Each structure stands twice: as C-alpha cells, then as structure tokens.
Amino acid sequence: MENDKRRVWAWALYDWGNSAFATTVMSGFFPIFFKQYWSQGVSSTESTFHLGLVNGLSSLMVVVLAPVLGAIADRGGLRKRFLLGFAFLGILMTASLSWVAEGQWLLAASLFGCGVIGFSGSIVFYDALIVGICREPERERVSALGYGLGYLGGGLLFAVNVWMTLSPQTFGLADSAQAVRLSFVLVALWWLLFSVPLILFVKEPAPAAAQSSLGAVRGGFRQLRETLAHIRQRRDVFWFLLAYWLYIDAVDTIIRMAVDYGVALGFDSNSLIVALLITQFVGFPAALLYGWLGSRIGAKAGILIAIGVYIAVTFYAFFMESVEEFYVLAVTVGLVQGGIQALSRAFYSRLIPPERTGEFFGFYNMLGKFAAVLGPVLVGWVGIMTGSSRYGILSVVLLLVAGGLLLLRVDGRGGRVVKAEA
Image (cartoon, rainbow, N blue to C red; front, side, top):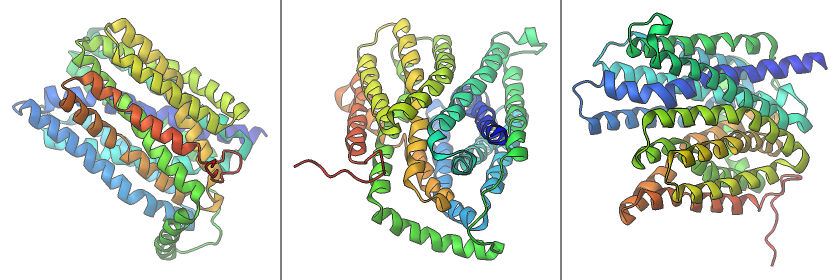
C-alpha cells in the first residue's frame, strides 16, 4: 500500500511542476511581455495576430500528434518516455525565453510555440498513466489530487513571480523586465524538479506484447484506425467525448476570456492578476474536495453540478459591475474549475479499454486542444451582432447546456448510453 501511495504522489507532483508553465507563462507573463517587449515596433493588432497564430499552430500540432503517438505508446510501452520527451522539450524552450532580446518577436513566438507543444504533449501521456497507478475506485480522488496540486504548485510560483515583477529591488533585480526573464528560468527549474519523482517512482505499464520500435510504429497506426472505428461503435465513449468537447470548450472560454472581459469592463490589470491568483489558491482545496464528492455521488453527478455552477457564473458575469464582484466570480470559478477537469478525466478512464489508454487519452486531449475554439468565436460573433460584450460572454451558456444534455445520455454506472425516455 505504501508503494501505491508513493506512485500516486509522484504522479501528482508532475502536475504541481508543469502547472507553473500554464500559470506564469501561458496565462500570465508571456502574452504581456510578447506585446510590450518582444514586439517593439510592431502594431498591436499585428502582435495579437502573431500570438494567436502561434497558439493555434502549436495546438494543431498536438491535435495531429496526440492520437498517433498515443497509439504508438500503447503498442510499445512508451507512455512514460513520450511524456518525458515532451516535458524536456517544454522545459528547454521555457528556459530559452529568458535570453530572447527585445524586438525578437519571431524567436520568442517560436520558442513559446514549442513550449506549448511540450507542455500539452506531455499531458496526453500523463493522463494515460493514471490507469496504472491506482485502482479504479480511487481514480476520482487521485485525479483530483493531481489537479489540486497543480493549482497549488502553479499558484505558489506564480505568486512569487508576480512579487518579483512588482518589487524587483527586493530580489536584487534591476527592473520588472529582468524579473520576468528570471521567472521563465524559475518555471523551467520548477517543472524539471517536480518531474523527478515521476521519473523515479512511476512505472510504465507493460504492453500486451513486446515489439520493436518499427513494429510499434506500424502497430500504432493500425491501432489508430481501429480506435476510430471503436469510438464509432462504443456509443458511451462517443457521446461522452462530444459532451466533453462542448462543456470543456465553455469552461476554457471562460478561463481565457475572463481577463479580457474584465478589461472591457474597465478593471485594472493588477486587480485581474489578483483574481487569477485567487482562482489558483481556491482551486487547490476545491479540487480535492470535489474528488471526494465525486467518489461519493459519482463522477457524472459531480460534473453536472459543476456545469450548473458555470451556468450560474455566466449569468452572474453578465450583470457584473464592480471589481469586487469579479473577485466573487474568481472564487466561484476556482471552486469548480479543477473539479470538472478532474472528474471528467476519471469518468473517461472508466469508459475506455485499459490496454489502450494512451490512444484513447490522445483523442481526449485532442478535443481539449480544440476547446476554446468554438467558444471564443461564438463570444466574438454575438458581441459584434449585439454590440455588447456582456451578451457575448452570456452565449457560452449554450455550450454548457448542450454539453450537460449530452452527458445525461451516458450511464455513469457502467458507461452505457441511456436511451431517451419516450
């Protein structure tokens, strides 16, 4: 039992480490530094286009690679190796950002794009390893532990990095720009350090049959074709993936658009950074509590409750007028954000064949990378049509409702699709 706990904590600590990239780099400093420092002499609209393009291309790369590499990893027992390969790519690219000179937006964008590929690619195989580290009844709590530690670890380092930029002299730094550069190095070191337990204590599940590298590649592509057919046949997996794509698209849209929405309402940037920190630290205990709740009432019920909370949050945001109300929104989102992600991962793990976790989680993460595509377009289009950003943000309710209704069709007890009542 002790060894089981050690593997669980070693697995979960990887989330503690890599979440620093998501908070400090992706959500926090890179977008601001890219526009204000690396894109000197470039118009604001052009730099926004560059940033959007690199985000889109890197996500598309992961979308294309994830299912194929997942299938190959399953056939060859390579999940852990692929995870570490992508992780080291992300770590190296993140550290390299600190040496990019002012005005070198193309180099900065290229390194960032490769960092996103490393970060996102590693998560495909990280998720797939959950099946081998704990028993099925424990997956809700173990999945929630990973997300909870991610919020705490990423939030702690982000708080230190924010402090460094607000008071660089306290840390013996010349200015905020130097603090941001140092932050990229700290993220890389943090990510590397907390990957070590996974390297040492998490074992690769053995493949069904040993294969050569070339055989694993050939078998991986063949298995991928079989998986596409398998998903079409397994209505439980198909309907869940469709539901997940819709509701997680809405969740990611709220995460990514909240700061822009706050700016549109006239809130200052410092207040928005504080709100982001609030979400991180509330998300840690909330994700753990949600994992416990999911183990009691079932993952499906927990997801539906979170969807209901997000619907209420969206209506709340529509009427929001003050920064204090924005803080309330940040706390509420923190209460369910990690929970809906953790329970979705655990619920999905029950629906798929255990010998094909890398492959099936490749599709799962592929949909995750497609998330926040439909939502932002919907928000922007509705905002233009109505002339109000409030109506734009309200439109994500459509995605939440549609995702919830589709999820109701999947039987949470056995993964079978529930036939609609006549």
